[in-house]
Image (cartoon, rainbow, N blue to C red; front, side, top):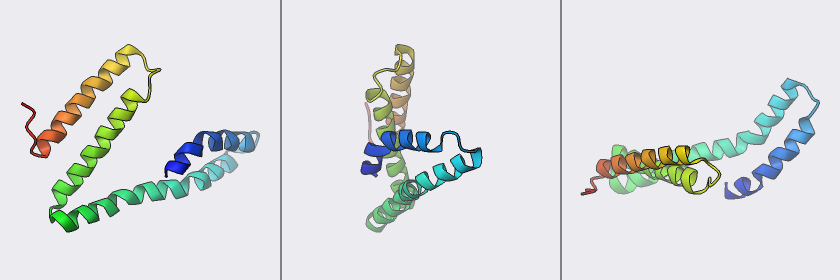
Length: 114
């Protein structure tokens, strides 16, 4: 998946040039074929990770909550720190929401913040 992420911008630019001037149906089909494999692979990660965590902890709810928490925290981190071009107002919203998500996730996992 990381390799696809590294080449995706170039790949999408090439796909746009390749499908320029074709019909909508051709563009949709080409886009579908381009994205189906990485989408399926990304979609398969959560069930596999949940299965692994449940085997060790025997608690489905806690396993799913922990994985979603980690995913959300990673996404919030990436949005805030990897997008320096975002304006100040949007960044302050991201920080506030990221903090709320972090606090909620810590409380849900039994971690005291005070």
